[in-house]
Amino acid sequence: MKRIALIGCGGSGKTYLSKRIGTLINAQVTHLDAVYYDDHWNTLPPEKFAAIQEELVAAPAWVIEGNYAGTLPIRLRRADTVIFLDLPAWACLWGIAQRRLRYGGGQNDATGVYDRINWGFIRYVWGYRKSMAPRVRDLISEHATGAAVHRVTSRRQARELLDRLTKTQAA
Image 1 (tube, rainbow, N blue to C red):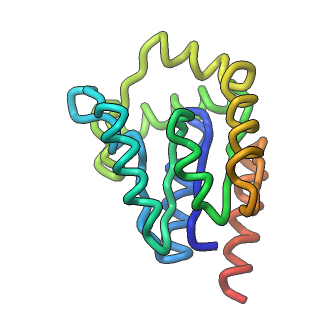
Image 2: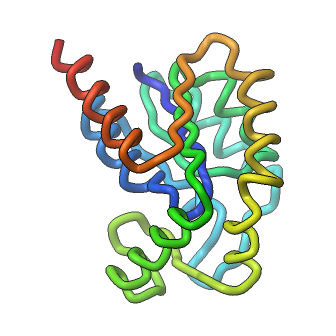
């Protein structure tokens, strides 16, 4: 377990889990939101965003968290482990609310991610499991053929997975 793609809806716990796993395997953690957006919520051109990911996945060890289905195959082809946080919408919205309370919005110093919540984002989170999750599952099936795939559907399962990974790494 050296190259980990962590995927999931906003508020699902990607940042929390990626930081823990990065520490566990002593690998660089990349938050794709911090790569894709600048401080003013401007985005990178798609070809530059893809090129940066190609460079990231060439490293021997990494944890990359984020959705971005358009570039997901880049990460999936090189990942030896895929973690798909497929939590219910209410759990993700609760995670977003907790993050907002914890950091107060704006730039999150811990990740470099700019926290921007609007109605479009809330609608995206609410519809994620119906519209995006099937696409993510299809991409995983198609491109992560050699990877261990973990589909996590609750925060409890996420804690259990982290406990198992910790025990495996200690052995």
